[in-house]
Length: 195
Image (cartoon, rainbow, N blue to C red; front, side):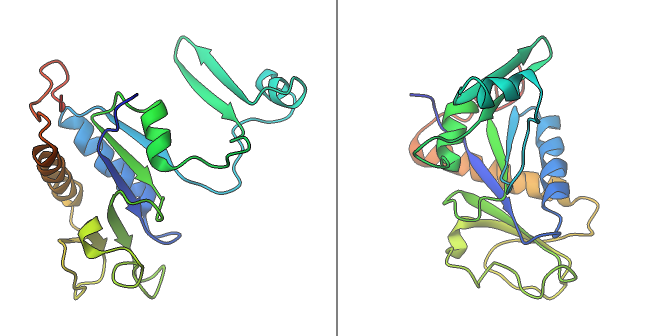
């Protein structure tokens, strides 16, 4: 079975800055030598459109899934099948097991560690403290609210070093998680990432 690399979800309500946070954090961690892979949870999106060969494979040929492959990359498209949508952990294990770290945008229902992005102008309330998720599942809250209080680190959304601060927290989390389960956490000498 494929291994399950560490997963950190970037969660928040619509228009809070999740994508900006995920890309900034991914860039920071990649720059530190980690092999970062990402997952984006969305609603009602389509990767394929009528008339393309891959669309025809599914809609005319009845294929459940299609892999598009070429010299520069690949993509998998298709439906979930009778079992419905797979969990974040199943997706990561199946498709991203080679990662040092997976950052997921969304997946509020996941049990993975999370960083919340909370912008007061976008929503009156944060998820933290108002959802069913225990505070121990949160790694940090990135916010523009100066007096926000939580039992986890608060990172200022306007701090130019915010992605570095978040990356430090993610690295510490990865190290602590690996120590807990007895896995090695030396840097991969080839890429600088976690082995």
